[in-house]
Length: 428
Ligand code: NAD
Image (tube, rainbow, N blue to C red; front, side):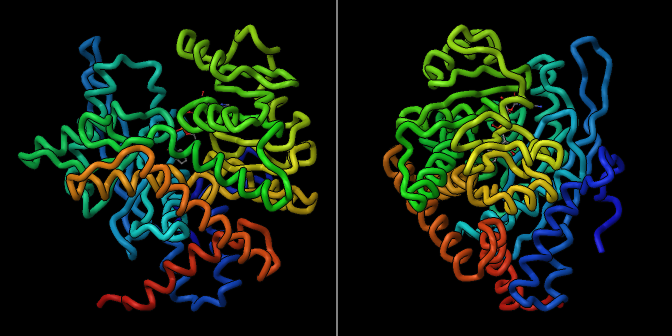
């Protein structure tokens, strides 16, 4: 049984399963594989705390607009809650609850002492001035002041937020505490305790996961054709690093559209174009391609790095890649996942493929708590070690239990959390 307030009210197609129910479905598969006590499964199915606050913001016009701000804290049995803060017009509690649960499994899978959370505000940030976004962010952090903190819940950037918003959240929290609190958020600017390597970390982790998966197939990244949907913090970094490693990035896209070049795009030139134009559209070194077309292009590896629900029962039978790496969270619907699996297409699940970000967030938090900062080489080395170990644990588990990589990753992540619940016992 799922909490009804978390279920979406929208049903785009009859087969559509809302993100929270989908994540629960994967949890249930892992629970069955682990022969888990149902008393533990029901605890894991429910977020521990859901906070919704009203955020009044004085707009530049003088008018006050109220936004709903959310923070979903799924499970803190292994340590403080951890998860991104999303500013996007499609944010819902159902989506945030699913993403918070994913964070719990992701941290557990990587062996990081955190639980899962996710926050967000339903807003299109592009429609508001920098001053309005700053007032929104500071009031949001202030409303959550008792629910966040280095030992409680540590937000990070996600879609529509960046180091800028994290700096405002850190400053707001610190002003309320009366001293600088470095560990309250991660993904901060370097000047206030950010970690070297954090900005590229999620993309670097995607590159490592793809590299390890190809290695098992007897291939290297050299010359491999890759299409990437989304050219933001994750997709942009993955494109750069994969390009540097010798892969051919044949297509990339953003919310406005995409570009394609069958022999590979010049990624440094494309990044310069994006810095000047805020979109990949119009890049002279490629032909236009739509987001829908990008997903079904002939390529070796497809990397959805934008939003949820991009590969669905509508297009799963037309995906031509041999490997799909979920850089975004939950980009494949439940039915589409089964369709890809039955066609022999290997999927690197989100809780593994995009875990590089939370690993370096953890390293940033460790550095901030100890007031001792590392060079980038050390950060990248520590992250790579955890990612490679996690990839091979998942791969080995999938061979042992006979299912796909997602079931293996869930079994490992969920299993670790369930063990911690058993060891701690039920309070009181
Ligand atoms: P971002 O805001 O930096 O970039 C998002 C990108 O997706 C942009 O290029 C945007 O134009 C594009 N996009 C938005 N709507 C689109 C649409 N309808 N079609 C195609 N493209 C669209 O966000 P991000 O931080 O790169 O996050 C991307 C995904 O990665 C999200 O699912 C996020 O939860 C996940 N993720 C992010 C991190 C992180 O460290 N930032 C870590 C783990 C997972």
